[in-house]
Image (cartoon, rainbow, N blue to C red; front, side, top):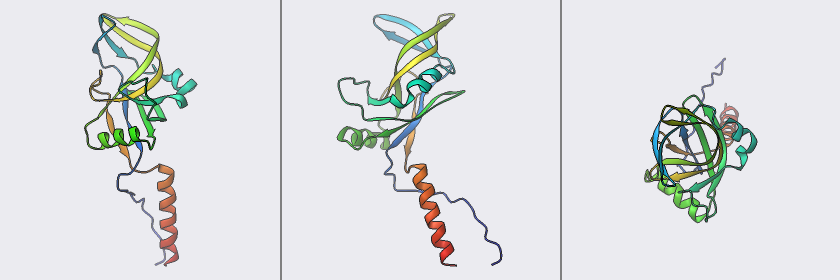
Length: 178
């Protein structure tokens, strides 16, 4: 063999990852909100969390059902705004509550996100309150989200850096056998 050709391999593991990811907040989707005895319509504008991510993105916790009296089950490893919404990934800690939440996500029982935030700047668009800027405090795994598009996409099965390291070691072994 004179030329060695390489193709990127897809590495799969048995699903033991501890990172849940998905869309925490869809942008442009309007929902009916009822809280504190008031009803109104709401949507988030693209870029609503940009400042919050920049200033405190590494402090955003993952909770279950916005439960503030319990410890969080994880923390954000990725918060990224795109045209369609706020995309997020969270490392879930290896605790009893974290393990339980991960299993519920894997089983498809819990499949949604919801956010805890403080409004910073809003505007009105007819009867809709548009959240132009919001300070993100936490994201929760929930059974029933306010926004239908706020969904858990899945559980990452391996950390990308680990996958690259595994691929490199496998490649070195293959090349040694030639």
